Length: 380
Image (cartoon, rainbow, N blue to C red; front, side, top):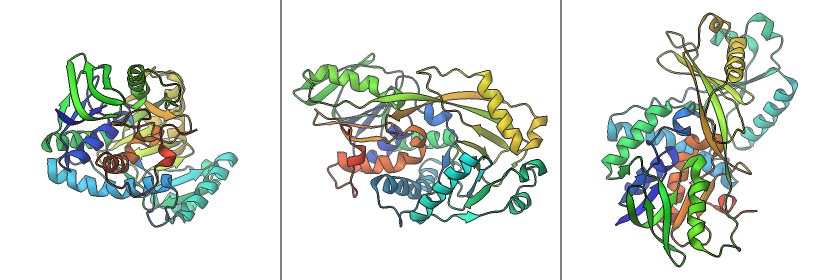
């Protein structure tokens, strides 16, 4: 029998499996389709800066812990597996051309500085020197503010997922794909096994980490619990994000460019990712001409040289979002041995190592080191 069964093979589930297995826990991880091919793969791999020194609130501590762990895990995964996830602490620039975005950026700068994240003001002239392709003269007059954050990092998320998968296998994790959860078997409030289309799987602990589909799995669990009138169940909704991909032949930017909710992220091999939309469309992962046109217009407004290129492709992913946009991390109410790590919204990849270490400690009966109440599943 497994010590732990993890349901969901994205960055959150794979990270938890990798972490638990590193502490001698025998883990099986199942995925309805193929591991590492949903929102974790579809994202852009942006890792916004965070500082452990200024982190006071639990949300800040989780971000700071995750940001610190990403560099450590990148080195460890490369050593364990030989897979380079292309982690790069390259810094990132944040700009604003509209009054509303300028106000939001100023607020973000205050928050970063309160958390002791280094933020440096940068002029349009400095930007032009660093990125000659950026900001044509007509936009120089539109630029209201710009800041450089040297601790921002990026990772190539498909390769990170490959490294995590290989790392899990090397640590003895059993990974079973094309395996769909059907129903839980409980003894009182303790889960005993999970029935799947591939047969019954028994475990001492269970973790729901299926991204946007986590609520569907938790619904299966609560159907087995029986009287749950006293339990507030977590709610997770899918939020579609579409991303456009260019290839410029060589690396065009030294670091990401962020403007409001959108960004341009460079890859070492000359690819550029342009993202992202925020759409409430249920479980529809199709792409749209409207998003294609909007993202292309945004990219070309900052990098006019892209107007001469055709985007290579566009894709979409579904981000798992809680109603208050904070993740659910902890024990599932009404159970003694079922846990959840989901609802990370746009920060799943960024928060995955911190979530894994924190929940892994809880599951192993170890002090998580900071208060997890803001992430509890039955919060108001």
